[in-house]
Image 1 (cartoon, rainbow, N blue to C red):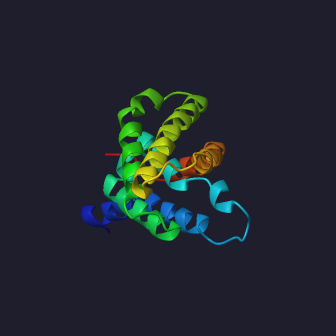
Image 2 (image 1 turned 45 degrees about the vertical axis):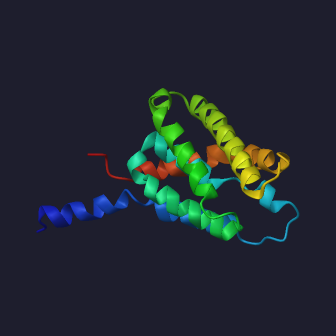
Length: 171
């Protein structure tokens, strides 16, 4: 026999499952594979995660977690600490503000929305990096990563969808 506290506790913690999953994706993407231009070809898993969870279940990936995951991403990629956090929090704010537009629509509309929002985030990342380094960086690496991210969105969204369906319903 279980009381209400013990019966609800596991379900309340399960909603935060996306946080370690995203951290795992960040670490996996940063492994050295000794392939030329691999860093440019790696999809931005954090951007996909932020958009998906901000749209479908914002409570599962809160802004504080996004900030910490951004710091982790900066740490493993050698970027300026806080740069990724800033860009991902802006993406979260944009995706969260437009979530009603995408909820209940076809996957293609959501994918198109991700493409546009992630392009805005990529542009913001390019501007932020250019300002931090004090020179105008070439946009090609960010553009290539954006393309790989948009191409990778369906596969990761499908996996996140499976994870979403296994979670308890929102209260």
